[in-house]
Length: 278
Ligand code: ZN
Image (cartoon, rainbow, N blue to C red):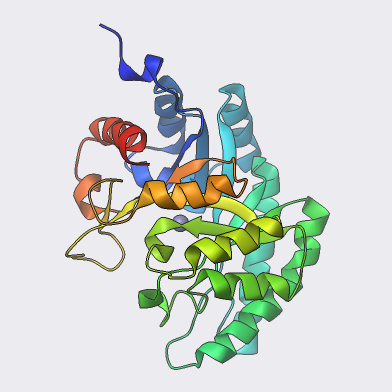
């Protein structure tokens, strides 16, 4: 009997370490490689008490592409001191990406409850302006990830593809682009047009996939496997690819339900749903 992974192409499948968070990064890299998966996006917590450069070597030795480091951002804050702290943290994330050998850092831009979204957007813009020189020096791309509006209170004041494009327009910088996550953007009625605009400006840096469960029982940790929910993942992937995106399909699933399952079984389900529903 042959296994599916020897027959199917997972070379453009990437898994975020948080998706299989029961595994250490060492175990995750071996499991992904054994399953034929081509890429890994590393969450910073997976690097705790480890040397990023050493993990980078281990990943490269296994021919696993390092797609991104997750995540920087969270620029807005009520005090100037906290905003400076956030800039310092983002500089450290850029350094960490360089040590790891990741080409990009994903930015969850941030928001502050009770502060206007306009003020938060201004602070996000100032934060990006402060760290772009560091990104340039390190040769690291910054991927703005718009988040679903349900997170506009405390996670991101950038909630649509148009807002992400507007933010990029302020800089028009080759190292500043967008991470398109289907979970956050599937509702966006401008999605296709705004992906086209982003593509023309060479800003389609990353593509994250999962699904939206009905009903959603947890605002953070109830994402589904592709095909379990209502997101037209194939349609959105098609918007990306017809506009020239040829990067990885990154599976990023925070799910209390799936995190309780055997992670090996979960990884198999990810691979099946990737082939069937994305
Ligand atoms: Zn994402």
